[in-house]
Every structure is written in C-alpha cells, then in structure tokens.
Image (cartoon, rainbow, N blue to C red; front, side, top):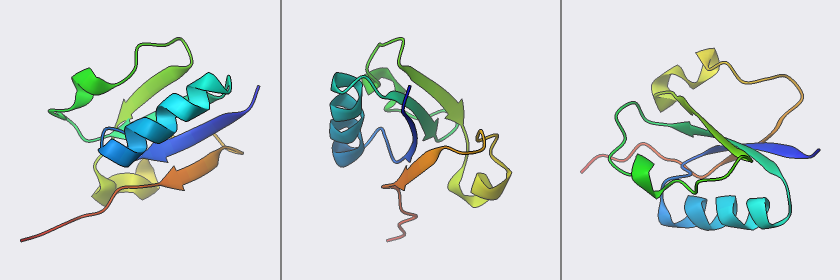
Length: 78
C-alpha cells in the first residue's frame, strides 16, 4: 500500500491533500502540533494516523523509513 507523511495537514491545503490521498487509498501519517486546536478537523479514517510533533523537532520525529513526505507547514511570526 502506498503511504505519505504530511506536515501541515490540519490547515486548509493540508486537509484537502489528506482527503485526496485517502480517496486514492493512500495511507497518511500526519505530523501535527502538540495540542493542535485543529486536530478535530482530521478526517476519521483507518488510513489516517497522527503523531504530535513540533516542527522545531521534526528531525527527531518517529517517521518510518522509506515514506514519501510532503511539507505544507511553515513557522510564521507576526
């Protein structure tokens, strides 16, 4: 089964991508911010799993080897 790792998956573009991947029967691992206020927006599907991870600690995230990764997240300051 194909699979992908997504950062920024709780945002508008990320959620659209996650829904598209699910519709194509692709397993999705979403890296989400700890205590994300948007976690309730994550599609309920057996194809979707999440790991809480701050982008600053992305290098230490427990991502399985050989996964395709898509980054849609950014650190923004105002």
